[in-house]
Image 1 (cartoon, helix red, strand yellow):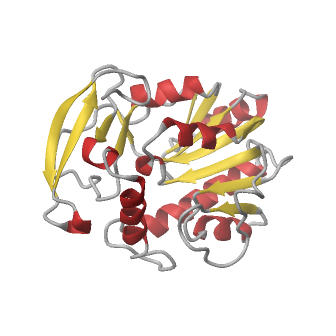
Image 2: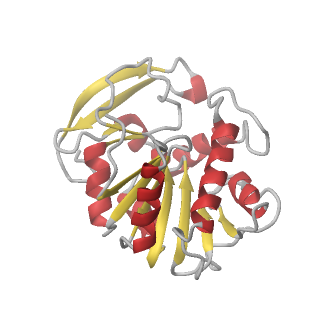
Length: 265
């Protein structure tokens, strides 16, 4: 078995006993020798049907609700993401020439929050039932968008094809607004709180840089309070000027870099 991000060799990492939670028992995790991505060998060996059932069963616990014990900061993080995205749009850092989409939006809460700031975002959800209006089908999806929002999804994806599909929707002047856990090194710790029953992939800074380069992104902003990366196809002047203004004002919330911002060391 090889790493689906860089094709490096995967070696045994650690195990976690789920004791029947979501019908999981002992889960085996492996780690890439090259890019240090970690993944669950157990989850990757599930059938597509079993994997989809696991995800649907788990997410139906909180879809349409305003709290979830496994993610107590969920709603406050969504609010911070909405405020940050709105701010970048008003500063013309995020283009609005083309439509926007929230890919794998779940119950659409983030898009609904953005609508309150007069930012229209189409909702796309392949697996969960729609909540409210604004959803588009796979057939209605456009070929490119100025902003593709993707939050708390990368940890659930078992193939490079879907990752490529998401990044491929970003237009030449666009950006990927991404929320995902990225660490310098994934801890070999079965008590780590991020090891949820539906999280099957864990990204290191190295593995995310590989993907950043693969998708031909140029520059990046990381916003600490919202835990969001904004990956840009090209480094336009407004992006750099915005980052410089924030830094000169003493803000430590926005971090700019040509390349992937490896903030979490």
